[in-house]
Each structure stands twice: as C-alpha cells, then as structure tokens.
Image (cartoon, rainbow, N blue to C red; front, side):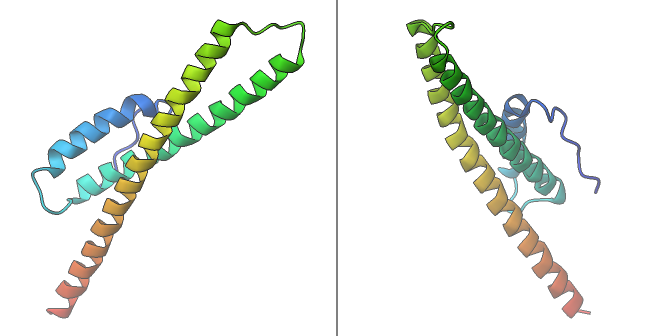
Length: 128
C-alpha cells in the first residue's frame, strides 16, 4: 500500500484534528489496525511531532523577543501586550501537552501494529 502524503505539512494544527477524527471513526470499527490505518497513525504522529517542534520554536522566539523588548527602553511593552503574550504561551503549553499525548498514543499504536504484523508473518511462515 502506498503511504498517503501529509496534505498540509506546514499546517499540522489544521490537519491533525481531521486525521484524528477520521482515524478514530475507522479504528472504532476494527480490533486491529489495517495497513491504511497504520499509515494514518504514522501521519498523525508526524503531525504531532511537527506541531510540537513549531510550538517549542515559537515559545523560544517569544522569549527572545520579550527579552529584547525588556532590554530596549525605546520599545515600551504595554500591559495588554504582555497579557496577550502570557495567554498565548499558556495556550501553547496546553496544546503542547495534548500533542505530546497524541504523539505518544500514535507511537504506541504503530508499535503494537508492527509487532502484530511481524508475529502474523512469522506464524504464517511457520505454518508452511
């Protein structure tokens, strides 16, 4: 089976919920993952990893900007701006926790699928 491409690699926060919705609807009907579902789980895991890195890079950049702003007396930072940055960072941290859970869940499901596929292949080879 050909692995499906990531449709919007640059927009994991958009793509990930759609993949999860579709994946959960499909896997709810099966005890074991099919190869297609395994590939979708792999795409979900990749999006979670990419989104995690984007958030971490962004938080680091925000910190650098805030340090620069605080060190530069010519660029005053108002309370509303600081409050908005604080809210954004809090939101990003919560999203990062969720993405970490998604990545971990998909990784576990992929590993289980791969172990089952190897065991089934070995059993099939031994039955000859």
